[in-house]
Image 1 (spheres, rainbow, N blue to C red):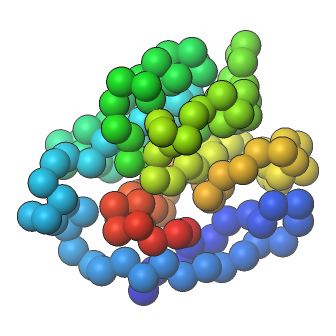
Image 2 (spheres, helix red, strand yellow):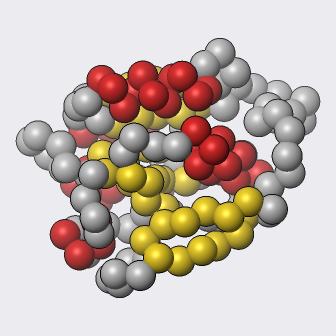
Image 3 (tube, one colour):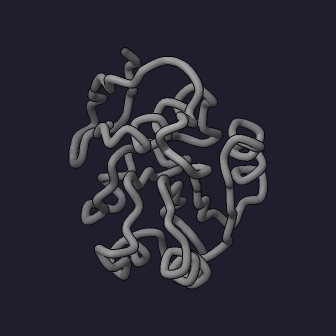
Length: 152
């Protein structure tokens, strides 16, 4: 059992939720494919941090804006979307509003430097919030939850 810490929508408090995720490798023989993570962030350091945690076991693709993210989501099955909410041009919140159900990843996680993202962007609906730079154990736990179909 791993404890994830993230902000609750509309509160200044932190919620501790437990995700029942078996320890061990992220990729099981029953998955039958390489997990796919999409990082939407205009900061290359974020993409490199995520790649350092997952590559080569996980396909990690980075795009710098909402339009490229939408295109990628239409073409590829994505298990985990890591999304900076405050992007130049269209925002991460815009991406969430534009995504169709058919291309929505198993889990959507906001990446931010903001202290309380739900106060700044109250209409944003994400499964979890990670502060930048994201911790390796949090990334691994969230991907394992996405692959197991366990909410975080």
